[in-house]
Length: 137
Image 1 (tube, one colour):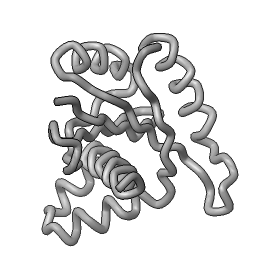
Image 2 (cartoon, helix red, strand yellow):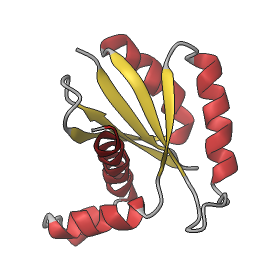
Image 3 (cartoon, one colour):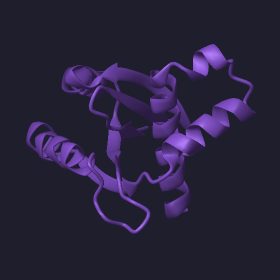
């Protein structure tokens, strides 16, 4: 069965999360340096069946674009060229980094591990994916 993949795109690092094959539970997958993301996705799509990709769209609290929005939009344009048959869904990512940090603290993650920004990116991608799953159920 296919999975859903979520992307928390960043200028330096990108967090990734994926559902189980039943598309019910979101779990962190990995984080990668952003310049290697396209190759990572090509390899991942060869190994796993993915039904759709959810990408977090950065927005200010008033819904306007942030300074990161043009970077994400450029990635979206490139993604659609490289993976034209893959369904891509944009999902609001407001407050996911804060929520990720709160979740890591609540989960008892050590301070040293919380300082690893890649962990924050993975958990943020998971929150984006879980939010998407809740919005469609």
